[in-house]
Image (cartoon, rainbow, N blue to C red; front, side, top):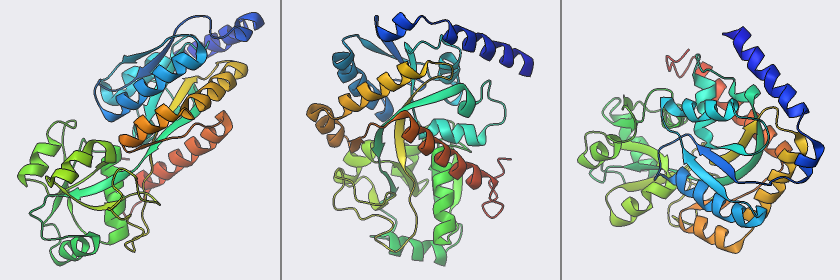
Length: 324
């Protein structure tokens, strides 16, 4: 397996070295593809399509979004890792990719080695919501309840080792509470059980929870970012409420590792231009998402910082996640 991987990477490197300079200068000369390693219809897919639409205008070439869900996202990631490193096949992924890289032991690729960060695209807050039958109006009251009754309350996640699982375990550690993890096979069963009261707590991205919060189906107790989100301006952050705790959610674009640097830099610059468009900013803002854009170097540093963060979470003996 290791030998095969080395051969593939060597071939990709040779291919990148043989890309004619004129082809790089004329890039892009045909349509590009964003591979989204998730099913269509979710918040990440929405941001990918908003980005692709504007980037098509900026580049003068169509950017197509292709959803390749399955195997926790590794099918789509592997497709990009194995693609010709010419800038025409790109990965549009979220913090989930870094979480998987920090947790999984048997991926068919090395996320940190086989992909090159192109740009940070969006940031969006996560929020902790509870079933409205829980007798707590804010974070302080919920923490007090949980401390008074260890093990009484439970939270759902889309599976052990997922971002939601790790984020909530970090909350448990920061708040000093004992709430029980209930892992599901994917996202489908989590919200129905939260609404029915079979679980009481959920950490989720803000975009899919805005309507649930506004309608009273769930109660927001805190946002997991340093500043409040415009989508939920009346919900204070965890830090505002005295808990030193934040978990950034974000999306980014990656290319196969051997993609020529001039192409990566051009893509990054054009993505940044697309993310400064007022229409893009407003469409994303309404969904509770911030348009960003970054240089490859900035994204690479952020990528490594996030990987180190989640590796420390996974390896922390105090959390006892059972993932090693």
